[in-house]
Image 1 (cartoon, rainbow, N blue to C red):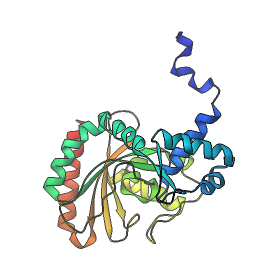
Image 2 (image 1 turned 90 degrees about the horizontal axis):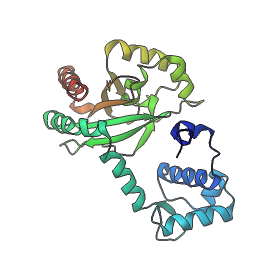
Image 3 (image 1 turned 180 degrees about the vertical axis):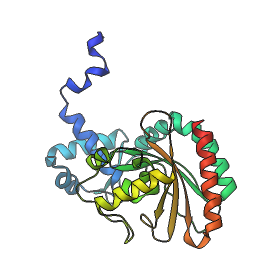
Image 4 (image 1 turned 90 degrees about the vertical axis):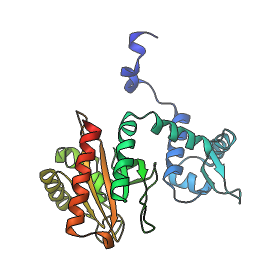
Length: 256
């Protein structure tokens, strides 16, 4: 390999259609909440039926995709799980954060999440579940809109608004009646988050749940955040201060 063949020239390399389709299909299935059919794939991705079928069967044969009991539904397979697990296991931020998250979860008894910004979504990287039976846990790999989560707002608040505006989709869809759906309102919220140093998801992602989040700054752009999610029935002003103090201490341990 010559110097000109390195990754710096990736933007000038012609894309391979079959590879593009494979990636698009895997991302499509990873975002699906239920198995997708061949008709779904061809209609949603615009891939010709014969090509989509051949691609699905290749991925089934290699273990990246599996079929449901009916044989007509497709979902991610065990190979995809292995790839995702390998990504997390080798991620430096996860390695630094996991022991601190374990301590934080043990101290507070609540669900702790670590997430990273990816486009206009946040992706959960690690989770420590609550000790309580009443709790909401987002498993690693789950994606949510960045504007409707405390984690996403904690990250976005440290970016210039033009950059935030550019990465957001045209319409800010609502997950609950409390979700922010207007750009002016989101910009105002992010300015508040930047001033106070932490974000709050006030039932914007899940009804009955409040999430507190702090950004993780390792130098350069902030891409990750740490959060604590608590049902409203277990919260009062004093408890919120305990949670925020614990989150700040955990943030300093992770980034220090």
